[in-house]
Amino acid sequence: MRLSRIGRVSMALVVSVAMGLGMTACGGGTVAFIWVLGTQYNQIAGFKVDNFSGNLTQVVGSPFSSNGTNPISIAVKPGGRYVYVINKGVPASGTTAATPGGIALFSVGGDGVLTFQQTYTSRGSTPMWATTDSTGNFLYVLDTLYPDTPEYPNPNGLGDITVFAIDPNTGRLQLVPNQQIKDSNQTQLTFFPVGPAPTMMRVSGSCVFTIDTGDQTVYPYGVGAGGQLTLVANSTINTGAGNLTSISTSGNYVYLTDAAPTSDSTGGQVIPYTVGTGSSACSLNVLTGGPVANLPLTSNPSYSMVDNKGKTLYVLNRSSLNPNNNASSISAFTIDPTTGKLQFLGTGGSPAAGNPYPVGAGPVCMVEDPTNQWAYTSNNIDGTITGKRLDSNSGELSALPRNSTFPTIGQPTCMALSPNVN
Image (cartoon, rainbow, N blue to C red):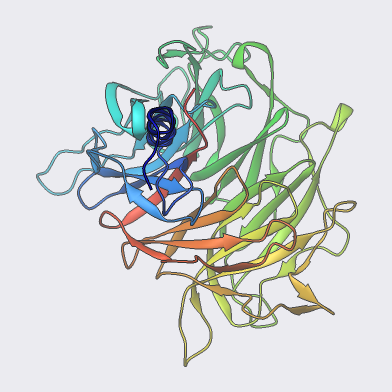
């Protein structure tokens, strides 16, 4: 069939638009970018998420250097233009000097290409985690230890949160001093103390919660003006957990993952809380019924994530108690929209077929794409990403329509997803 001149011009315009949107005949365009950290070579792997199939393809130039040592956590400024990578560093060993940790700032260019900008230093030592506030105006960085000085000693090995203001145009960071606490010289602290051995934190509304593995507590702060973190009435929340590994939030609910074996021989539990308001703001109260056991035969839960709609909680399990199938998996729980209570995703109190869902070995992190179609885990042991189709109504997971396993950089740790760049 011969096209008219007008037809040929129209066809060319359609092809041009499709190429501009990243579309092909086999895909639906790039709906998001995923960045996965790898400690083996101190790199960041970048992937494009195909809207039609959930398939991952590498960003041009990937992998990128993390511009530090031992990348462990990553945060994306809302809008997707800037990425912050936490390089944990390494301690001194024998005659080898320690390598300090740092915060590497990257800008996100066309097609998801990362460009390193500069490195910042948090106030404490050994940074572990980073997150932005809901507005994207502030970056919170969690440090294992706050500075031990004669003016403000640290005999109990407490950690800290370093707060930075984010420049909306450049992504650059500026330290926010602690206006509430002063040292013995009446100088404002440059950090906000938390409990011992903190490993993870989450922002929930006007609250910031840190899990502290040194004493299995949660340390809460209220979020004040100018990025200030304000002390609340119950500054330390005792959880009774044996091995806190993760914290997730959804509306007025907080879910803690405890990897300690439970009395019913399951490998861990989830401890659900409600978040207090008013004079009890940022306090946590255990939901009626208390902790919820993990799915039968699952073990070593390492991470948890609430889906974008707040309907399902997913728990990553690094292993199993089944001697014939010691595989990693995802446990899925439905969240009651009225009470926040959890129950196995399934019917009649029994898990649905496939729940828990198999993933690659040693999952450590999980993300969901902005269209609520696809979910991904980074798997530390086998060096892969596992992709899943996500049913946003039921919460059930299934294999991607084409390929569900994607190789990534060595010993991947955490990952982050940017829905767009604007």
